[in-house]
Length: 337
View 1: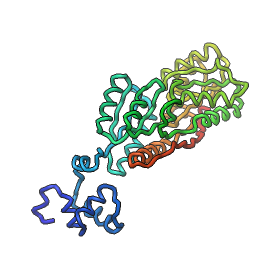
View 2 (view 1 turned 120 degrees about the vertical axis):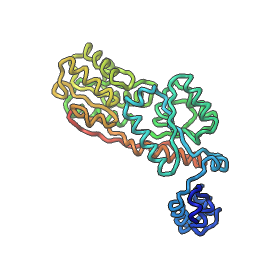
View 3 (view 1 turned 90 degrees about the vertical axis):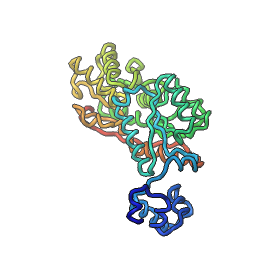
View 4 (view 1 turned 60 degrees about the vertical axis):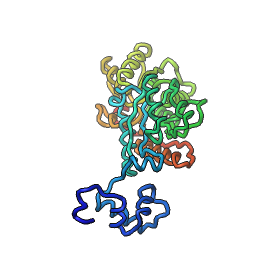
């Protein structure tokens, strides 16, 4: 490029001139690299770097019918985005996966019916190419609306039964709960309680199933409490459990945040962790490692969940069907149990 050209924004033709290829080749590289030799692609990518060329996203959107962005749609209250670290981990992973593709992630939060209606209008208008749906409750109608509108969607966690099949990325909820329950049993604990999440979420529903299956005949419904995935919820649930079953010697909480709340209640009641009552969580969200005492927990593969959701959704947008994926978890033993 001539020195006089440096004051204007570089164009595709500038990139083509530097790379020594046609502007059509540059366009193909920018729009996915189909039918371009590796040598030509490398020359174009180097020319883009040296010229400082950036894509005109508005023009590209008109040409391709795509926005170049995906929605991270959280159907929970705004406060949970900041109080529950699991959502931040998923968000960070999805952002990183899209950054590698020069795409944008749009954060949408839709808890109330009004918020969900606004989000549905926004998505249907084509502002995003697809939706990464996080924490869908059985009572939500948003998933069905997205399916009816033919919006490419991938769920985090297994959608509720009866829905039009939607690809999902989940963990083995039942197997993970069984693994933790078996660990506590093998440690000699006999009165094991469960604090699980809402029954209209995959985690709340299936972690209870795994806990009950592993205990078998030893399962006592009086040692189960349910509530939202919040610290105060874990605190209140533990308080109720101690009132009716003071001989509890272990607690399995369906999230690390709830486990921390349970420890708050145990300390208030004068119970030591783990000497008097062992406490285990679920997620390994970062909170588990820094808490005192550090939490024994089930580690979810957060980076893999986000990356797989993004890969799956982009394939669906490109017209490639994808099946749901179930990822393994890991038992992490720390001081709390």
